[in-house]
Length: 264
Image 1 (cartoon, rainbow, N blue to C red):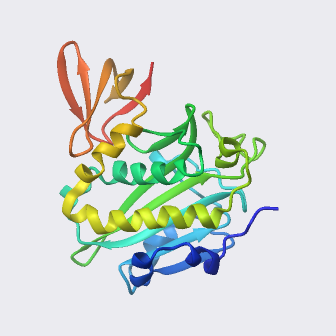
Image 2: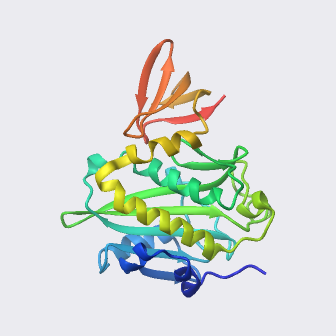
């Protein structure tokens, strides 16, 4: 029997720092999208952080408007709403920083098998396990940031048959039935540390950890920019989280959002 999401159980595993910030924690049985819930709530949010979880999403979304498969009670559908002190120029490395935090957290449960595929996919044995969708909105002079995270935990292959890429789940990797409250709490502790450190240090604070988790580093890949495909070698990332690639002896720095990439 799978454990349901429970606010009290979640709080038991949260550290003192995040609890002192008094985040609002909202858990629903179903919703269209936790990211949409978080964006709506940001406008009336009292504290800097609010946590939105749901047992089921009816219209979950991933990167580039793709549907995020969200069966009831099987995965983690989490959105953190943050009234941030950031400006837009500081956002470039945020997704990769979140991905690094998420991978480190999941590796506690996944036998250190999780890697990060730039810019925001998490894979185990080249199978997608989790994804990130970050959205922003202006609230007066403040940038509201929604960090949306989806993690496959208990989902079986019949429930995930519409997914258009190879995937796996935390339970399959670990070969045990995991408690979603425990996974979520561990991740939230890491995200809170990010919220505290990122405004001052940016992605550079997470760069070394990312390099240890980088799935594409030193790989030959195909990139697509403005419908043009090129073969490149991935060198790594810079301090802003931009992808560094080598093409015919020249080095290029590519920003998240302007390029798609796949390993050859």
